[in-house]
Image 1 (tube, rainbow, N blue to C red):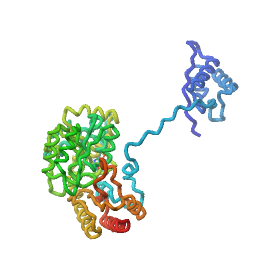
Image 2 (cartoon, rainbow, N blue to C red):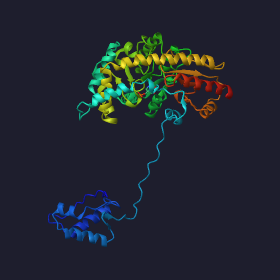
Image 3 (cartoon, rainbow, N blue to C red):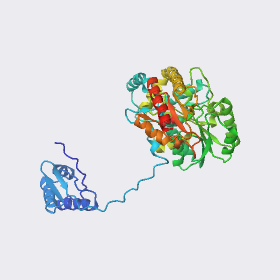
Image 4 (cartoon, rainbow, N blue to C red):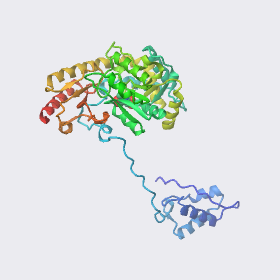
Length: 473
Ligand SMILES: Cc1ncc(COP(=O)(O)O)c(C=O)c1O
């Protein structure tokens, strides 16, 4: 039988050898001060003998006395235990804090019940992810000597590999300007907390967890109206930015949730507007790695230089469970960002960072992206064919040109909640996007995820969706 651990007893004996009375008084003091809660096991007699140089009889006599006073009980072969004293007043309960923003969707969005087809997920089909090669890198890393310390800014070889990769794509960046984070979400968090922005501009609709994060930190949101069917109305953005937000959070490639990508004229226009209104830019570049083979689109970070804060991540494209992302910042911002990261996590786990570094150093990432892009292109084309064939009149969709998702827009008269309930019963999960909008939604539909679903599942889900639209309408 394993015995419960015993509490440490400090016997106060004022310089002389402890007596039985000293032990009794010390235990009594601990019990009445709450130091020994009911159920605590007292040190075994031989432990007291050894610690205080007492005779066995002295310690035993003290315990007998404590038993006689009803303060402790001796349990056969288990030890001596403190008897639970009358209950103390319970501490004040912590009142349940409010959850930030709208909680049901999107906080539950990724938890799709088993057997359901997740038609709006932003994840990529695990079958398309290089799990074998990641495992190979992990095995190789584990053969190295594990460092006992960590670098709060992130594992240096990974920072070097990321900088090298960005440099080959024309970005002027150094390893010291990169901070590794737990996915882009932590990048957004440390940036928002470091800059403590009072007012932040975001596309509307936008990646909902970013908006909810900024709101939870007390920032006021300025919505930048985004209509993926019409493109960006720069005059309207000009008016919105004249309210002087200090930061604009922008997703220029395969924007989440619309799948929209800024045109090069829009990229330049947005940079000009931000410069005119003195708004700093936080670019979330989750999409540019998913551009079709050979396609090139400059990022804001390339056009605008080091003043553009740049966030990207390996989570969606490499393996979600690795949770590795990063932020690239101007040298003057790096110490504050690292300090903020340190305050929340001290540093991240070396092992995953080393695995990603190995994966990059071996050149596996670019090989993987090339095959991923081919697969996503094929799924995108199949999705367009299915939509053309299946969707009733009045339904329209964006043509993202690749990447993971597009936006399907439905007639305004259609009750989305009724449609969602209907789909749920038929095994299809769609994410209600209302939390992604700032103010009343101007789009009426869903993100469609062709990156996650096989062509068969995609067609099945879209057939059911088209059916459901006709029924609910
Ligand atoms: C646009 C965008 N940015 C950032 C994130 C955060 O991703 P992660 O923390 O997994 O890198 C997501 C997640 O879906 C996203 O869609």
